[in-house]
Image (cartoon, rainbow over all chains, first blue to last red; front, side, top):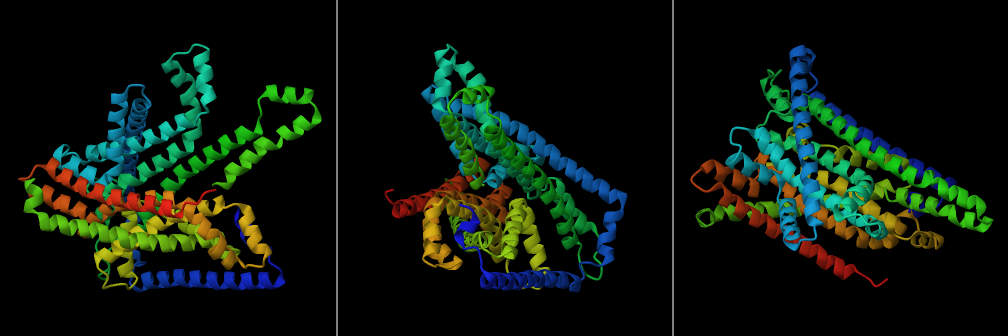
Length: 306
Length: 216
């Protein structure tokens, strides 16, 4: 159900009222933004002295370094978590009971633990001098377990006929999994997998708490080093600059997920296999009419849910 | 064993801190999230744009960054006097509200179209349709995803330990720094505390789900 089912098409009076509400809420929002801007200005956050530092190449170099560290951490953690996810999902789908149980326990445990608590443990017990690996392994364990669940639900969502048909033509268990189920599951679950990667990217900022020199930590130490201008520290400019960096990175990755989702949806309803097309041409009119709206309806259903 | 009995008061304080933080920010997230979901389906374009911006912005911000923005930004805006606990509630509540909004919105989408059409045809306004017809039915579909969001929220409260709030994460941090105790045993007890909390939440939501379930 899309939003406009909830209200009638507004008549002249309703339109006037909606315009009034719209105007009032816009005013209220603009007022709020103006108030925030005014307060920030009033407390001296926009003094040029706090911002000039961002013009130096040395500063920019440090920001780029922090960015690269974050991206590197994210890349390692993402790759490892996908591998771990695949392994755990395979184990959870195994035919052997003990393997299945062990994998279930591992997945449920790491999904139930707060990531930061895991990172504290790894940092205090294993990687005492190397916060990066504490962060990476923590991220891998948590996100790997979540990815495992995503993979598993994808494999389970493939229609049963697919694996039955594959077994019927004599494929072995591994072959059925690798060449029939997994390709379809990954394709179906790609948006969820990428969304989880966005979560991984966001969670690299937890390194800040264990003093790992990723982007946010660079920002904080940078703000602490900047000399306060008229008694105002450079924290708010830091939050504005680094916040936009993070949001841009995550938005870029999320938009990949939306793009993939739209693409797979379109291809599912847009291009029917050639077999159907020739078949439909031969078939009688009503059959064509009955077949045509079906994929369209399922496609529309899909878009409504997002 | 020693860790727990030696530091029982500390553990209790941390446990209560985490529970309070979770409960209060859950309340804030549910109220804000439902309001923003109502904005996103409302007939007023300005509110719809605000709702979309709120969700997009908060869903793509790391929680640590949001904590930093709230703890550094709100005092600069003139909210002095607030202690770190309430700032943490604000950060967690706002962050989770974006996810709650999406859960509620997908719940609204799952209500059969005929319900809203029938409501409109007997002359109900948008507010009446939403609050009396659609939202009560949307609750049913939205409860399970909101339950897992609340569990995620309980786990996210650990981040508050980086911002001077007493809860289980800060207990672990200070006990780890203490040395003398086995770090794995500390972790074990902290893990047990979190598992109690998350089990309680999932039990509560299963109860709610059963209560609200209807035979269709």
